[in-house]
Structures are given as C-alpha cells and as structure tokens.
Image (tube, rainbow, N blue to C red):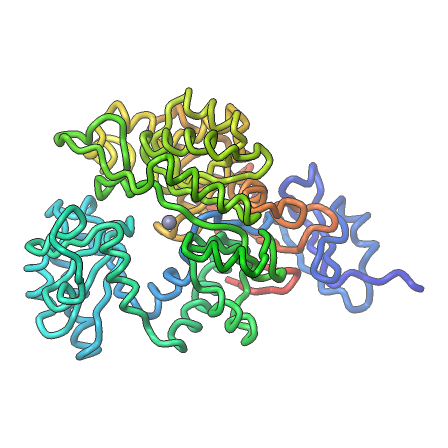
Length: 499
Ligand SMILES: [Zn+2]
C-alpha cells in the first residue's frame, strides 16, 4: 500500500510545545507528525491542504474547564445580557427595551455586577417593577447565586420568607434562585440553537473543548450533535440528583462519543463571594456573616462516596476556606482514592496548609483566572467583601502550581474564553500569584484535559492526539499577550472558525 498523504499540513510558524518544530501534519482528524518543515512536508500528497502560518503560531485548542455552555449560547440569543451595563440605570434600560420587544414573555436578564456600577447596589424589586411593569422579569447576578425579581416573577416563588427569600427586595438566593430559574426555560428550538451559538462562540475564542458544570442538557446535546450543530467537545458533569440514574444505567466516567461524554457529578458546598454566600472562616468585611455552608462534611462524604462508587468524577464547588475545610474532611471520611482526580471548582480562598492537604489527597484544582482580572485588587469587589489581607491571597494559582497540584483553568463564562484569564495571571494585581506563559497555557490546555481524564487525547500538539488546533496571530513567547488574537480554529482537522 502506498504511503497515504496528510489531509492537512501547517507549516512556517512556531508550534506550541513542539521544541523548535514549525510544521504539523494532520491525518484522519489526528496529528500525524510534528517537526521541522522539511521532514513534515514529506507527508504532502496530491490532496493535502496546505496552511502557511507565515510566522503565526499553532497552539493546542483551548479547553475551558468550567462553563455553563448552554447559558453562553442563550446569553447571545435569548437572555438580556447585563454584563456590559455600566450602571444600574443602564441595566434597567436594557430590560425595558427587551420587555417592549417581546410583550407578554418573560424577561430574563443575566450577568449584572453592581461592583462595576456607580450606584454600587443590587438590583431590587422596585427598580424592576418600574422598568418591566407588565410581565415577569428576573435577573441573575454575574455569579449565579442571587436573582433579583419584579413582583410578577416573585409570584412564582412558593418558598416562605427566610434566609434565601427576601420579598421586599425581590431577592432570591441559592436554592430559591435556582428553583425559580428552572421554571423559565425557552422552547426546544431556541435551546438547540443556543448550543449551536455557544459552539460557534467557543470556536471564535479558540476553545475546542469544555467541561459543562451541573448540566442536565445531555438529551439536548445529543440532538445538537445529530443536527451537526455542535463543534465543541463537551464533558458533562451532571447534577447530583442524577447520580442514581447514572448508577442504574451502569455509566462510567468517559462514556459517550468523541464530542459528548458524561464525566462526573457536580456538588455545591457553598455560594459565592459576590453574594457573600461563600463559606469563610473569618466574617465578611463589615458584617458578622460567614456565608452559607450548603453541605457539611458528613453529608458531603456520603454523596462523594456515592459518586465514587458509581465511577463518576466529583466536581465540587468550594470557594471559601470553610467550604474547603469541609471538602478536605469529607475526602478523608469518604476514603477518596488519590488517583480518582476529583476536582475542586473555584478554590478561591485556600491557606497553604489546606493546599498541602489537597495535594496529599490527590485532588485537582479547577480555577478561573479571569476572576482575578474582574474582582481582585485595590477598590475591587474581593477587597470590599473580604478586606485587603484576604484579597492579597485570593485565587492562589502560584501556590497550587508550586505544589504540583494538577491545575485546570476555565472561565465560568465571566466572560467566556481564555484570553482575559491568561493575561490576568501573567500580570496579577498581587504578583505573588503570578504564573509564567507556559504554566498559564498549560492549565488552559493539557491541565484542563487532565482534569477530564482526556490528556492522552487532547491538550497538546503531539502525534496521535486529536487535531484540535488554534492559529493565533503571533508567537506568544515573542508578542505581548494582549496583542495575541485567534485567527483560525480546527476541530479534528476541520476548520470551524476563521477570522
Ligand atoms: Zn460555574
């Protein structure tokens, strides 16, 4: 049999991790060769498509280790995006316009962040009643842990007044918030188009794989795949409520297709710093509150054991240092194996002894470097909520790396994409947590793949791995990061985005 030519060859530009290589050949969706051009060009056949890099660099596709993928699409097609509102008044304007455009329908706003507003306060029921008087309106704060409602939307909430329900202000928190949000879903067609849009948007950021957290969208993903609308590899972490169904079906982590697979189960131990619901050891600045522990160690250990027995991977949301304390205790109680790669999502406040314990237990850190850019530093939200001492040691990326704790980076969609986060860890407000370019890109590629047990398949440019590749505008080693842009994205050798 004659030697088969490559389907695709990139040449003439630096190849990330290729120790001096400047060319890559792709065959049948996988990388066939990496090396110097003269060597790789020998795989050129009559049908080979040639891509001249002309000094642009080739990187492995980015893997966003923590997203809510459908939401990213719907934010662009269905929800009212409040993340760019510069003031409370502007957010209300956006909601008012949306209400006029779709009379009678729910108006669902997402992504508001009062810490960016000159008014510096939460949206309240009275504001929303003024902006949207005739139809139900609810608005989710950027962290997802607080929902402000108008009177008509609040009527849907059946819970009594209490810790999570404040009817005067129209504020729902945690379970009460999620309960309400689960009742406002767009129709099927809008949902599939939402996933397709998320996938296109991901490709435009050079993202070829994501871990989708607390997602019950598996049927929707399968429909999107059948229609050819999904061009992103998705690793699903299901809500804990589905662990029994998982066990009954005999699923194991990694089951699925090259595009969609079930990977694990998500648990929530606390809330967020923005909503003052992250469980912290010392009180929030200016209050006596220490946040809300949603699961204490005994119940967490029980659930974790159940997840491990079902051969699923646990992805455990823990932001505050008290939440982390519960996780560490529960890991010991549940006798979690050190090679099971259970993940801690966010891991924002952690002491060095806690990180030592994490390392000893074999836990994986899944962190969001863009949070630093958004909220850390003088005068910003973390300092306001936690005071300067804790702000200075928040999001301890360098401490994690120093201990060789496996580190996966993701964006949590705030905003989506790796660019802001990588820039933030290269030049953080508190230099003690600085990472170098290799470490930052590693966490957003190979590190994220490792955290999903996919490192033999994704995350590097090496023979036999899938040809998920990104062409960026310059060599990141020679060009300032903020000048680097995505020019083209390939999934399994197929061009899925071109600038
Ligand atoms: Zn999240």
